[in-house]
Length: 126
Image 1 (tube, one colour):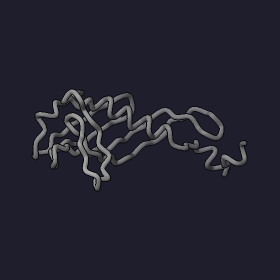
Image 2 (cartoon, helix red, strand yellow):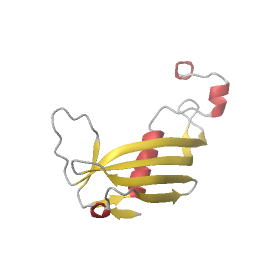
Image 3 (cartoon, one colour):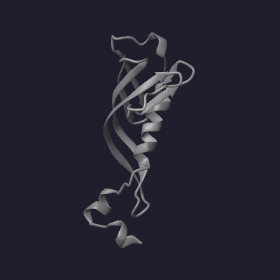
Image 4 (cartoon, helix red, strand yellow):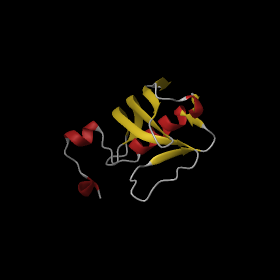
């Protein structure tokens, strides 16, 4: 699902993107200083690999996501500590943003339920 950032204003623009067993649902809203707030929830299941035993399993996901988007290159001030996603073509590709968030989760340290139950740790495996 692609949304034109030029259509986003102070009234929240709701969206919902589904893929397999995961849902990315929330809204876009103009904030200030040419920034658009994306506030959403990513929930469902994703396939993952255990970092301890290397078995594949389905990971339950329930993440609140919030960041700003800029229509074009964001010119931040020195005191600004915001992380901003820049959309250079005035389009927010929500499916691409969902997939990026899923990859961020997968890149974290993940262990399956069996390894958690057995109390295995990274030090025991290596």
